[in-house]
Length: 322
Image (cartoon, rainbow, N blue to C red; front, side, top):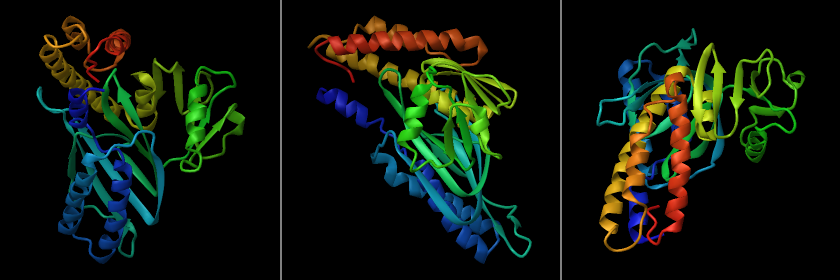
């Protein structure tokens, strides 16, 4: 890798152990809210969430998994905003714990806005134990590390020899950390109370995944969520429809911005050494869809195809951009 590509990549490194940071703050919130139930205190706690994220900005860790067990039940409420034309949007998190004699959720609290991070979770997550893992989103260059956060228990139904065998392997690699996910070959093996996610098979499932590793559809709560790459497949499985579509649009914005920067990088290198044809990069940028919803499903597949071609070209030239 050349120096320019290295410098460029470091400017786009994102934190990936966001789940752990959220849970660490949740532990602190649980202790503090037990002492006082004022909105001002919760606002202070929520703002510290951003402070906790800052030291992680210079670190990266793909394929990381972990679980954190708390001393009492905690609620994490989240929302996502796409942002304006030249913005990458943000996510907001509110932390609450059960307080007082009634042990009801504290009704007040402040939101912490988190920028440049992509956390796939349900809008409301309750529990004493939370799990998260990360995966990189490359298209074809590194765009971000995606974080998947949940407190639920899942049963992944993957028939033997399925095109989704890669999911069985990946979850097997995380088995010691993600004991909330059980991978089986038939629905009869699922335990009561688990969320059933069926891969390539029909049945009485809470989540149905069709397609393959590169593209497909996740059907959940009556909504179809199209995906490209396994990174977005997991995002659709572990988050609600609104959070998923919002994060997809945010990531497509970032992908377009990074592609524009690579165009400029290629222009600078064109007179000095061989690099990817600028026209290929421009064509790729022009074919990045807004999202992967039904009207853009074919556009998403085209984007993946063009990205694969770009990767081949980058490997073949003297001055690779990434």
